[in-house]
Length: 368
Ligand code: ATP
Ligand code: FE
Image 1 (cartoon, rainbow, N blue to C red):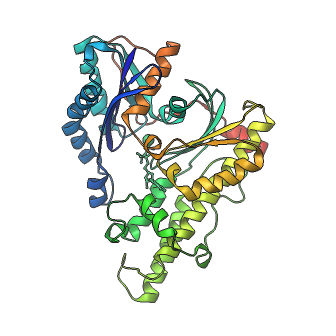
Image 2 (tube, rainbow, N blue to C red; image 1 turned 30 degrees about the horizontal axis):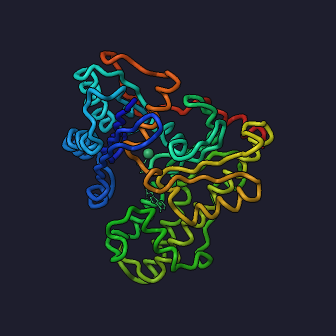
Image 3 (cartoon, rainbow, N blue to C red; image 1 turned 90 degrees about the vertical axis):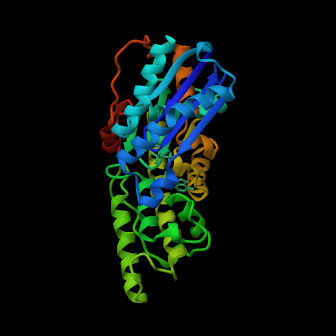
């Protein structure tokens, strides 16, 4: 049985065909990152137009590369939530036409569920496991108990860590930096941080006094922005033209993001242990999302997981970011369990905002 997966929730047009074992027959991805880097951020109508221009080619490329004819598919899975309305709309419109035309079942996919479960395509990770999803649009800690059964222990109260890193990178004009012109904000910060001294810039870790598993990154971003402004004034340079301590700022920012994520994750592990939410034989933390490809952040998480006797799994970077493969895999998981499979002609709407399962943040806070 073959599943076609289609992803258009943000700024990547992705498609892939998988078989039931998770073998990738064909895939294709069109990334809009370069366009959005040049314009200084994602402009939704621009993202929509680019999805519109590329979706047909991307889907056909994935099918062709796998030597798969649409009639061989068992189902089509597409992201319908959460994400940018204009982007989700293109993927959904295309998928609905496609399933009607080829008379195939449709599997609507929750983008964050797909991120959380991708790891199971690569290795057998039994439920339940703890998952930390950190990307440009999300940050959350959840217990994955089943294909469509999640307990949310914490989420961001404002922006996601990737968004904060992107804004700091933009404020430093890193796109003009010779080593960083093609890198995302987070990648640029990771690269520059390697030659920086994090201790020379004082930053406060967010939410130090609040005992829960939620995140906040706006305050950190503001702290860094104020430091950049001060340094620019001291050096007498224009906005975004700072030279001397860019590496130090990158290192301190990355360290503070890593510390915040590690502390919240540590608390989540303790909460799970106290409430028997993970398998006691092999408790596992899965980390995914674009920010999870950061080696410094991974190291900070390793310190915590080793201390607590938890296995840490990070899918390779390629599977941490948005793509059609993870959507197809979620389709495979749902097909196996016969969950959420719809007939070709059913009316489905996209949902820009959609929670991932049961909200447990209040219980976590109450537990301290
Ligand atoms: P979402 O998946 O939440 O809809 P998204 O499409 O922005 O959002 P991803 O493609 O998973 O998410 O990740 C992109 C984000 O990850 C960007 O904010 C980028 O700066 C960040 N990122 C990518 N590589 C790194 C890295 N090495 N270190 C830190 N951040 C990174
Ligand atoms: Fe994503």
